[in-house]
Length: 83
Image 1 (cartoon, rainbow, N blue to C red):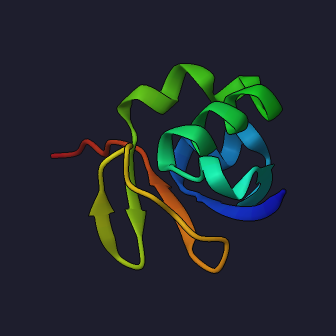
Image 2: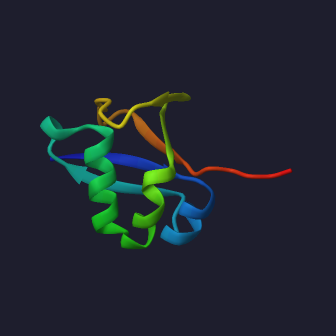
Image 3: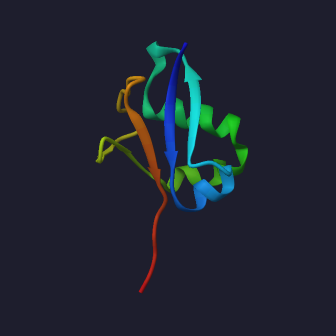
């Protein structure tokens, strides 16, 4: 098992009541999607929002099938609206 950190922004931070969440998964399964699935199990209050978030690693947007290593932090960025 490896520990991964997920940085939460906006409404996700409020719902999870945390700016950073640690998730453990098998290193062999380490994709953004696998982390999102484990996050939804650990914090079901954010589940409904996960389909709409942008995912970033090291300031770069990534697809959900992107591999991630334990030394990288995944950032979840909810959609923003304004005028």
